[in-house]
Image (cartoon, rainbow, N blue to C red; front, side, top):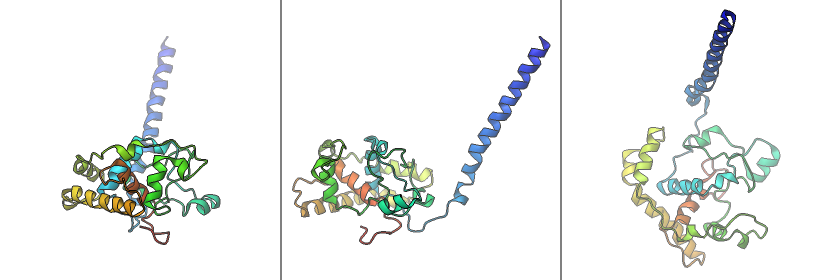
Length: 222
């Protein structure tokens, strides 16, 4: 009986030691993350409209079929562009690396297609890519964008390290409307007469057009 108690106590101690070591292995790198990530000066925080578009991207589960991480292999860099750098994701909370590629990687999609292409593609992917298996997202063209809490979102993001200033947060609603109007105007110029600046699709387009553009690798990046 005493031998069993001693053996049980030993196993308990070993379990505590193992859990402690495992915890340290996971926690210590987090404190060193800022030192390990090389800053990229051109990487800037998302605009208010892009924040809203990113939330829609997450809500619709886009990350389940599209990754946002180009691996450092020739076949990937030739298809998608420069491989991903850790410094590109410093303002992503959480990052959208994804784990599957049912659809193509989107890390460098910004500027690859015009706004009108994304507008048509999200309404019916087969209109621009006949063999696409992507579902339609017509409701994004109909749903009004609810940006009533954008300032609160930016305050929360500032708490986790995104360098939004008080002025950025104060001017967020006006900046959001301005960028949305610019996108809607570009859609109308492309003969999309029903484009409205206060729809969810406009925010999603803003986010998609931002992806991968901070490192300025493609000529004509918006």
